[in-house]
Structure formats: C-alpha cells, structure tokens
Length: 195
Image (cartoon, rainbow, N blue to C red; front, side, top):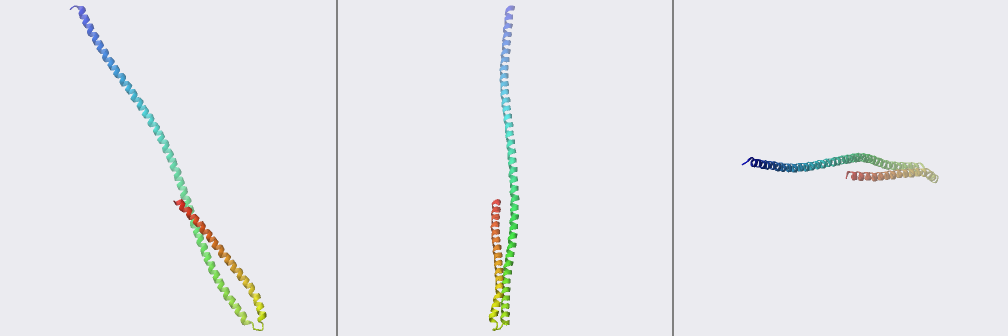
C-alpha cells in the first residue's frame, strides 16, 4: 500500500467520522429543538392556566364582595324589621293597657249610673212621700200644681243626667270599639311581620 491509499483510507475514515458526528449532532439538535418547542408550549399553557386562575380569583373576590354586601343589607333590613316589630309590640301593649283602663272606667261609670239611678229613685220616693204626708186634702189641687213645678225641673234634670250618662256610655263604647279595631289591625300587622 502506498501512502496515497493510506491517506485515502484515513480521509475516508475521517469523512465517515465527521459524517457520523454531524449526523449525531443533527439528531441531537433536532431533539433539542423538539424539546424546546414542547417546553415553550408547556410554558405557554402554564401561563394561560395562571391567567385563567387569576381571572377566576378576581371573579370570585368580586362575587364574595357582592355577596358580603348583600348579606350586610339583608342583616340591616332584618334588624330594622325587628326594631319595627318591637315598637309595634310596645304600641300593642300600650293599646291593651288603654283598653283595659277604658273598660274599667266604663264599668265604674255603669256602676255609678246604676247607683245614682237608685239614689234618685229613693230620694224621689222620699220627697214624694214627705210631700204627700205634709199636704192635706184641702191643698191637694194647689199642691198638685206645686208638685208638678217641683218635679218637672227634677225630671228634666234627671232626663238630662240620664242623657249625659247614656252619651258617655255610648262614647266609651264607641272608643272601646275603635280601640278594639285598632288593636286588631296592630295584631294582624304584627302577625304579618312575624311571618
């Protein structure tokens, strides 16, 4: 073998070695490019996921704030309704007390009226009896006139008194009826608010 063949073989082997290195380098670079592309895709997906998570977090925070504000408003409304309910309950209790007081007054006036009627009846009978005993038959006509003069104002006063008592009784009864109607309205309002 001569030196030319030797150089040709060495050149050929070198060429094969260089080709092999270039081939391996090309495969590695292709694999590296593919890996870099996958890495870039994964990084892009990760960024999208991060942005999506941030958006969802913002939406959740806004929704939480809105719900919290709404809950605060509802609680304020509940507190106001409770205060209104307590106030109405207080008014109802006052109305009941006023009604009881009016009923007691009405009962007392009834009793007083009955007592006065009995007293006037007894006094009238006593006066009539005294007048009849004091007068004789000689003065019967004159006394009859005088008796009429005495009894007419008394009757008028008795009628006036009975009329006033009846008016007072009717007014008390009307006030009591109005009060009962108002109490019924308050009770229904309180019941609706409680419901």
